[in-house]
Length: 150
Image 1 (cartoon, rainbow, N blue to C red):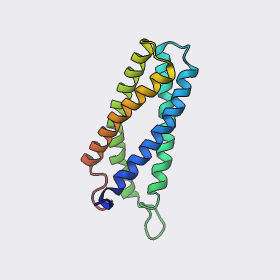
Image 2: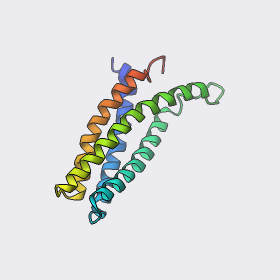
Image 3: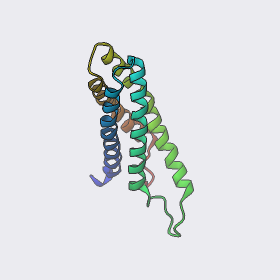
Image 4: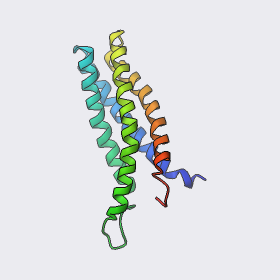
């Protein structure tokens, strides 16, 4: 049974590690920019969040799946790679839209009610991440990313 969900665990592990890195860096940036207007602080922090998250997640996802798309000849199975990339981008895209909206508005709200900038960033990101994880896992199941022998 655990073997069946191993790829889901791996995906979630990569997402959570990437979010941990982005939470730390985003909180630091939010605090550095604490003198900015709330909408600017929120926007810049979200931009940094995305850069850190996607670079970390992309690296971890690649490391976990680099052998999956190799043929016995050593060449890349481009058809399978393209098929899976469409599924993962679809799954992540849906989650990212929801995450972006929730995170931006939550952080903006927390800043306007006088939370410390780093705390507003952390709290908004944690809440948004929980929602994101739910959406991602449902999307991955719906797109059947880990079906068909993947």
